[in-house]
Length: 114
Length: 112
Image 1 (cartoon, rainbow over the protein chains, first blue to last red):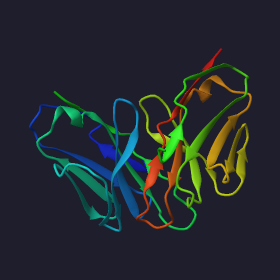
Image 2 (cartoon, one colour):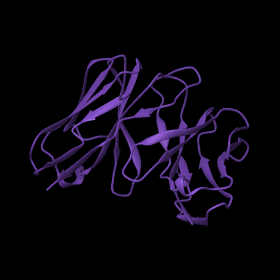
Image 3 (tube, rainbow over the protein chains, first blue to last red):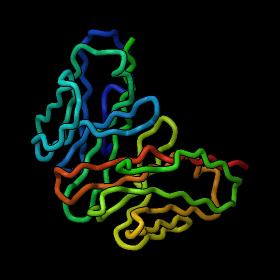
Image 4 (cartoon, each protein chain N blue to C red):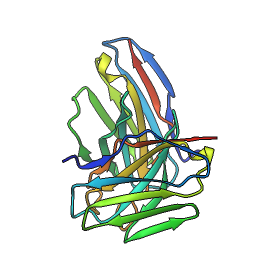
């Protein structure tokens, strides 16, 4: 029944490692997002995909690479993890256009880099 | 001026009180606005949308002032369960490529 799911929920890893976070939505939405929420709780958009195409790519290190195999999935791969990557990463989806920008968020992935 | 700015709080009010907080935005072309609620260690969830002058849903009222470029959220008869961080959200446009800007949030704590 979960609308937007993310795995894993918690991720603890060492500097320099490569890790992936997966996101799936079963709402039939055409747009998916990755957000980063740092220790100051500021939620910032990283990427947005519409119908599997990258449409928003904020100033994010190229160690971060999103991949959307289909409309329902948007994964985030992070290479060479750094201490500053520690944060909560939220996936979200919406049906863009018209009057609705209601976003549905996943439960978040709490990444800790040691 | 920040794109979306909120008073971080915390607002600490007794149960039953009325509390209001504002959010200012810089993009005069923005047409739709949202309030999200985020509980501690949880994901944000949509609370209210504001498309014209305002919106009311039970104890919650959101108002838009286009001239001064701010939206407000009023909570009447506050409950303990209203304790959360309230995020102001402003899309920059209507297209799917439009950025969606989140404010840094206002923390609200309701005390018994």
